[in-house]
Image (cartoon, rainbow, N blue to C red; front, side, top):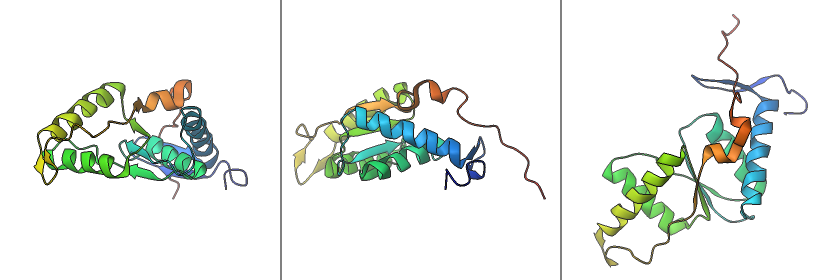
Length: 157
């Protein structure tokens, strides 16, 4: 669709209006980044991003690579942290894409803390759980991230 109708709006959020051509460009950049960082077909990639253009482009990139993707909640409540920690443990992604570098570092620490503080059948804590490498979404798109999105436009009636 991106080649046949490049200027048609593909995605519209409160913050952005993106054409098929631009969305494809962002998805290709994300695909190249994931591939360059060793993600292979069949390997899980976790996405902890707010729903929007970057989230959608990363999801399309995973599909292009043939990599299953895991949408994490990105929440901060104990239940959300526990859900994300369990999903990471069960699905074992090779990479986590976060909203920002600061969030990536902070959330990874909170994940480890919530894993260590939980009691269940496996005993206290989970020292055997591996935390996958984490990257900030800005690293995925690099310089493309600046000015990557068009401002919202008024819809014609």
